[in-house]
Length: 537
Image 1 (cartoon, one colour):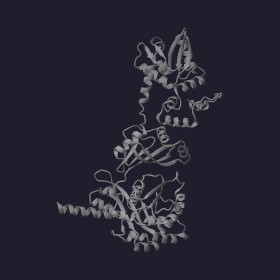
Image 2 (image 1 turned 90 degrees about the horizontal axis):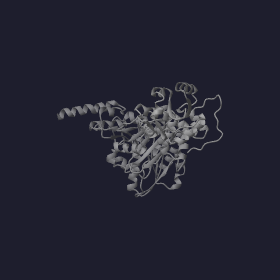
Image 3 (image 1 turned 180 degrees about the vertical axis):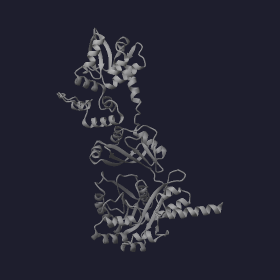
């Protein structure tokens, strides 16, 4: 129960809203009031009822506050019985219009429950028409509404507090309650969704085969979303989230699974994105990863970089390469992740997974001290700044295997993105380091399968061969895409991978075309498909 502060008085001439007064009296905090008001703005309803529903106050707290504020006795309509004789004293339509309820007779005095007991005009008018004195008592608005709804169904010999209570419960059930978070996650796993999104003003939404699907339930209020966030975060994490306005974490949910979670603010409300993480990594075949990735993952040193849009499997490809090394090499693997997504067990290798924000402050801080940890393989969840790239290039150049993801459009764009992070006077040195240490770059996209059963991976391959090293050193990386119109051992454009998937009937023309750089490649594959079909016919 909230602690009541002493000495708080309403200031004459100043109108206070109920919530502000409750905060002054110490019944609720400013944060609780703000949360309840957001819910009221979205769902409607009375603030007192919302505060009780959210568990911020109890019914007794609200009654005590109302009595103190209006300086009249409060009445709990859930705990009294009202006789038919008393109810018949005021027509039901008038009770509804005036928001009043006769409670009992005490001699020639009628005790009248009111939401606004300082409405002296109503008190005087009723007293005059009934020919008796009216003594007002205050009751919460949601109790009054439940009592008036109960009367609408007929009241026979009177009405009991239990009937009013049940009506109040039924009224609250008309607004669909937000489901428990665990049940939402269970449904996400059951549906085979890759992601789930929680946002105010919409039902929980699932991403299945890269398509958004609304769950069959009511929209979530800002308070619902905030409640989910508070359930996920510790007090310290919540304070950090309130300061930074976003927060990332990974979470194991018992008997459900493991999830990567991103919380963020939008339009002053909380939104949450969940990514399902399989506890056991699928095979190379199931992930549609080409065999050459297996071979490069087992190289003793060098740099491997993976790019692609968010949600297209970069982290999974990274995790699979770690799994390959763990199965085949006896070495020390150190990863820096934000957050740790896939949990690796120690197999032939030791796998040490450090979480940014918990085990180290930033990627750069983690990389700066990494050489003292004697790594053979360094895995960086995402390289975001030139300092991190500089350390990674040095590590790859001095006998370590470095694997990371980078935000870039394609496998050759990664190279220019890295170089352009550095000032002009350093770029020639970075080009030389990159040409010497880069093993390969991978660009990937996840495409919906034609049969609707999940996604299939399209991969762009760039192998840093002797010829490619020269193009990097000579600042001619852009020529790779323009000069190589056919797939080679060292470079296979994403267009060729997409066209191959279409030719094999794995994806539709429209879905493949969405990610094509040169639509002609796909049109040629379509013509070829038509020719083969005609011959077979």
